[in-house]
Length: 248
Image (cartoon, rainbow, N blue to C red; front, side, top):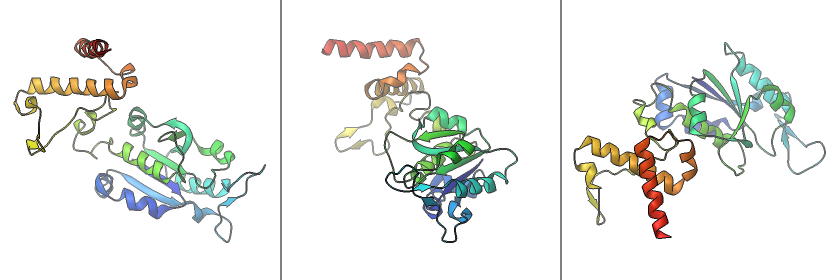
């Protein structure tokens, strides 16, 4: 997969995506991530990419021309039109499900806004969808673009050791991940749950599933509406509900 990040701050992006798992995936040729400087495509001799908004208002807006020409240069290197995402607090909130879908695409272009935003006309011209990483506002789209890159990249074949490395994590199947423990067995007076050191694999798997259900029920019950639950899952959740009712 190729991911192009269109940005005013390419060095900020490169400092992140060349590290850790994503950095290793790039080095191994599993992933191609590039930060493209929008300023390189401005026609202004002072390298300006922004101007005041029509109709008044605070701040400056990024102009359409540099963004459009930057996008066209990137798209010209692709055999088909890349999927363009504008990182914006007005977009739909990024989910693990959407990240899995994006991971199956060949080429993503991530547009990072800055200042007070971007001229609407270029968004209408090139953007396929808008995504947000949460209901809050940042100074630019670089951090959301890096979050999206990391989220998508780790689900590309070969980036992580195997599918289990991400399929048991929080949000993969609309459930939060179960608690995890490592050595030492006892720390600060607290011990690891006995089932995890029992060697009984079936009991361990049951414990993991139930703790995942419990944690989701307690912290994000809204996720249970879309989770795939079998009869034993539903029975366990009913027992949690009954306990809550008994405490009332």
